Image (tube, rainbow, N blue to C red; front, side, top):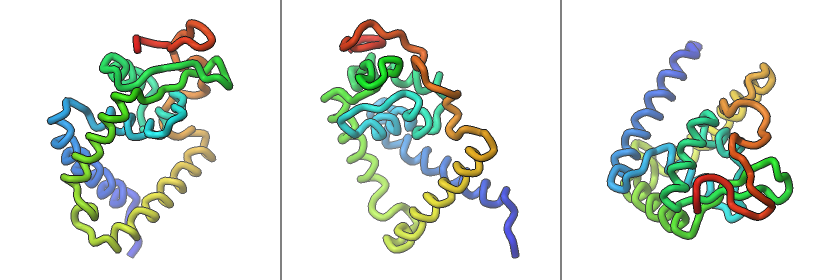
Length: 175
């Protein structure tokens, strides 16, 4: 029997909300939100990420991401800098303190979550992850084809809502 789209949406929404609640209970000890943790995790590479891509990957509206990044800058966990390949863009990058915090948070979440994910054997998790990835990709393709644009980051990225101050100087609210 064919399932209705609302059945899948209900199950995915419930699973995401319960998982986020569980992760938040761990992050509360570090005074960190799930969204801030996601942003820190997405910034784990050395090169930094532009705000548009970061908003899309974190599934956050651009204004919400800007607010989170402002808070992370104030905590000296990330910094902003002008993209050397496109001066209109701003890159966000982890500070050494941010890298340590990201590792600390990831260890705490992994310790609570445990391998494999709750309710699954390792084999089941190995099956689930590619299926969810494929579903996400298919839905993103449908959204792009329909003109939706994806993660709600709000169109083309020019200045990310942040003014630049010079060629090599950090941008935003402090260092």
